Length: 351
Image 1: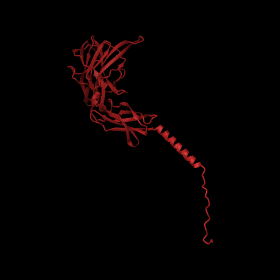
Image 2 (image 1 turned 90 degrees about the horizontal axis):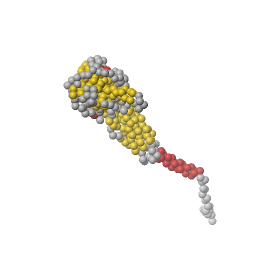
Image 3 (image 1 turned 180 degrees about the vertical axis):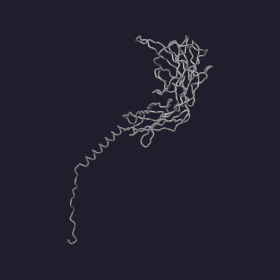
Image 4 (image 1 turned 30 degrees about the horizontal axis):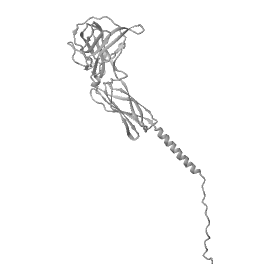
């Protein structure tokens, strides 16, 4: 899967606690309902339905995400469009935050109670809260200021439109729930680009079968780390070999999720029907790609013993039986041969 395909996944909605406050209304524009997809995320909580998408002062531009290439010290102004799809006014909390790769590889944003320290902290909105009338869209301006000491490479985050609602739990308690939608921000800060991926660990296990001809399951787990300063995608393949490089199985390429700089991701592959051939070696081959280029293949291998126990047991029994027979033959008494004397040989001088 290419990185562009990975980027077409919809923005994730995250929940966290958040206080609700009143807000000033802003000039609103009537807008058609955005369709859920890469250009607009649609969320719903209680009576509120809304969408968040990249926009401009005159309305949506058709962009899927906020994508920028800027030098350290640069600033720009852009707009995020928030559409109230419900039938009553809704107050939205609008702010920027940082992104990270979740354990399952999904694109995720920091919880609301965690302060952004990267690109999210470089985004500022004139005010945090915006009230949008029913069926209207507001194109909210925000400012992105890249620090002069910003590190080169990719910085990823999102511009969030959040709605807070009071809900009652099953035990009758009233809790404040915050639901969020975000338009992703992909910022490339100018400077040296260092795409790099490492296979940190490979773990191999084998379910050795009683019947060696039936084959067993090989489970290969490997952990990837994005050691570079740009986001990566790509695919991974696992090959299982017997001694002398005798290939037993090969997986189809597994699509890797988008890995942000510094992110790790664990892949698990299960390969069935592999016979126990004394020693099995699993080789992981990673073909990573960035938005700029493909990386050289990264290969790492690990092995596990896979003795064919039934065959070894049969060989042991056969060897034991053969040894026992040899022992019995060696210790058996030797039967001597009796020689019967024949007629005496006649001497030459006999008369």
